[in-house]
Length: 266
Image (cartoon, rainbow, N blue to C red; front, side):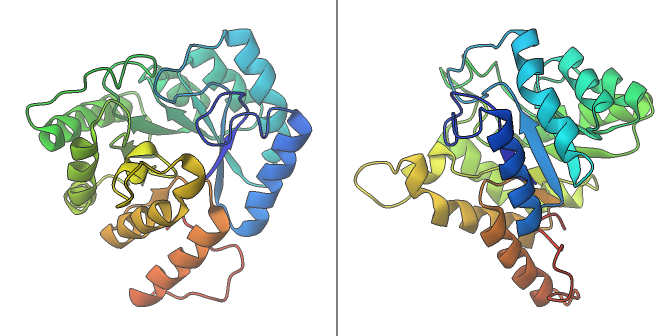
């Protein structure tokens, strides 16, 4: 899953693809590099981010979704049900539901759904994240949301433990260590670690690495997630992650190297 932020303030690529033409071109480039899904978002979910008015979010994402959907599967990354619905009408077929608000929309539109765990909101989530048992609590909440999604008739559901969304460094590492357990629970898993700040803090450098310098750590965590059996990795660096996915598939005995469209979604 390639990340496409049509925003001015996302933590890594904010402002790069704010113009529709630039966003569409980058989405097509990710398709060429092997992305199975392009995840289009018009509101930053970085820590401390301010909400975006609904009409502005719609203005940012709908032309991009419509232009890309004939070429690749498009997911809509949003916290607003109306944005999710409009994006599905424009061609998106997967709702990346950050705030647990669009389950019914996905059911009505016949779309797939990603249920993600987040403690708090993007503006407040990193103020003081705390858990008694982060793995148990996150897994339990995801299980509840899956059951609700199944109850309203959604057949395609992915669970995302929400790395970096209301979690400390220790919480993130605990969830990464527990990925095999989450995979074993039976629902397909999506993981997004790409360029996130916790990677910069475990780099071994005296000062935390900025987003531009977190490529190696991002790739390492994506490889770990794929080796643990996740179904989708959400990444900024599609080409390199696709190459890693092919190697992981090769190690597991899967046919690789023959399909140029094989990607990081396994």
